[in-house]
Length: 193
Image 1 (cartoon, rainbow, N blue to C red):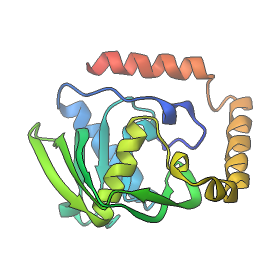
Image 2: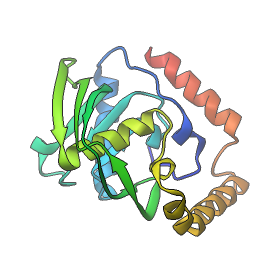
Image 3: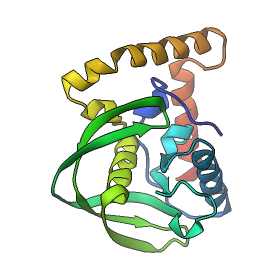
Image 4: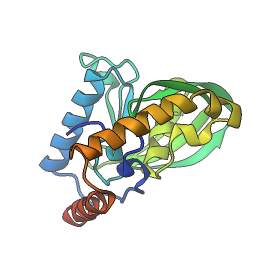
């Protein structure tokens, strides 16, 4: 398992709901959390690691010792939003690139946890921002899609550099062609639904 970088096609893949919690899913979650900590992230969506599932993990302290801060959201759905604020965001799939993104100040999210229990959380602050960012990922929406034209222009060269790196990795055979990636994602979907 690895975190893919922009413009990898998995980042635009619309994720499918998970229908069961089992040991395989729990192992995926552990790997996602470990990767997130290794990259000093606070959240990670399944499609960032080439998994086509509606699954996000979060620890706003980015501290593997703070187990009480670890949260898993299976099939998350934001049901209510309130307020609006603009703050700087980054993303593990866009290393060292940041930009100001407008998000709701408070949200209500419904999801399932790793025990298979339905949960409803009212979140604000950094937790609300992380969940909104990661839920966007599950719908194939990236934080750069939410930047103003001027702010997008400010990071254009950084994005071009990532695109060039991706193209170079593909030429070296490190990244398969889009149709092979899509076929793999579709196969993974079938295996867990």
